[in-house]
Length: 250
Image (cartoon, rainbow, N blue to C red; front, side):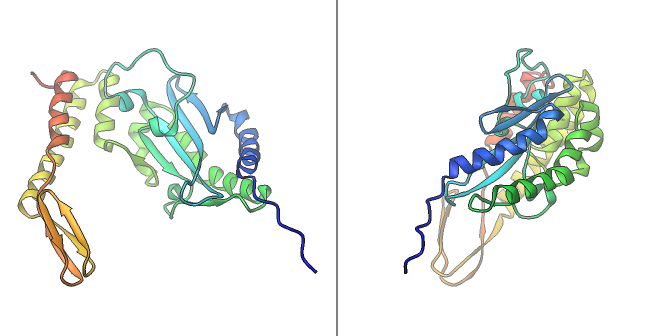
């Protein structure tokens, strides 16, 4: 006797159902739905984002992305555009994370084959424990400057020091902005010089090949090799940015 044929998983419909429940939970807190993105503004122009992303290399699974966007940090200007969009995507944020990572663990890969109620319960639990507390604290520029270091599960794209620099500049404290910029700049110069002089060690398995900055190495046996060189591109970008921000003369 043959068992009943299992129906194929309708991933889109299941994810729609999960997102609908999470939106119902977040809507009273001011979030609005835009496709797979749930978004709200705080302090007028700071974005807070929860986003559902299908995992392309893992069919039937998805991530929940998180983001906070402070306009001057994202746009790299002390005078960001006064016109704002209806919402911003997670990849437009300057402070980003994922469920799992935000709890200082591995990123969580949610399984659409599980019951919707179980998926929703797991997401809400972590939102309540790790995400909404961060959103409630990091809801202004002053709060961000004072307390963002408490939330180590978030990654500041472009560097935390540069983000601080942009916020101080937006708030009119150009002296502090310049101090932080030069500190950030020097860190990158030091790293560049260190990589050029001492290189960076990389572990290769026997037969593994790496091509880097003119070096072409194939490991004769498993072990560490030292790679020398570094790109000067980011330092050149910072030189241009300093002039654009008025922190240096051209």
